[in-house]
Picture 1 (cartoon, helix red, strand yellow):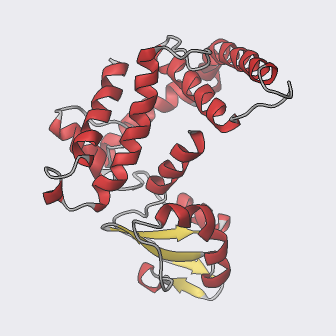
Picture 2 (tube, rainbow, N blue to C red; picture 1 turned 45 degrees about the vertical axis):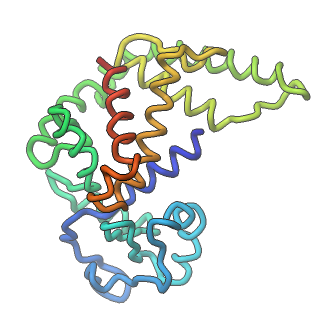
Length: 254
């Protein structure tokens, strides 16, 4: 489960900014976004996930440290160089523009919900981030979560031992990615909600299971909602599934 959802998350957060304002200083000189190579047969919606998993190394070898791809209506600039990524992050300025979260915003608007750090932009994003920085990034503040994190880590170790003991060999943990996904979700939820939600229990509580499933369904159906035309939303189930999944996620956090 973890690898599958991580792949989809990478798909969304690898999208280029909507306005490319940078010129890239490469060994051969400056390069505008329009001059970045678009590989022949570059992946569209159907093959983009496969491209993320297998194509980056190959495309870097063929086209250099930057290349373009498309996903639905999005035109992406892919970066395969740590040095260029560092350059991008260092020149973003006070109000960086990350991925276009229009699909997330659309749900918030329909349900009349406020935006958050992933959906806000500009000065409003900056104010939200400042509040989070004070609570999450200061060492003196972060130390307050040490006890909660240690508790979750201890439960992870117990879960690992139980998984090993229950395997045919007595030493194998079958689905490590899924277990680590549950561990991360438990830790984050403990900090956000100030309560345990049972991700590391042998039998995950039904409400928590619905929450986990809703995250997966939201990400899965957002792929279809991104590439399908708007007129298809009333004909095909993906858009309503996408909205319903977000509703479940928000209901769990309230």
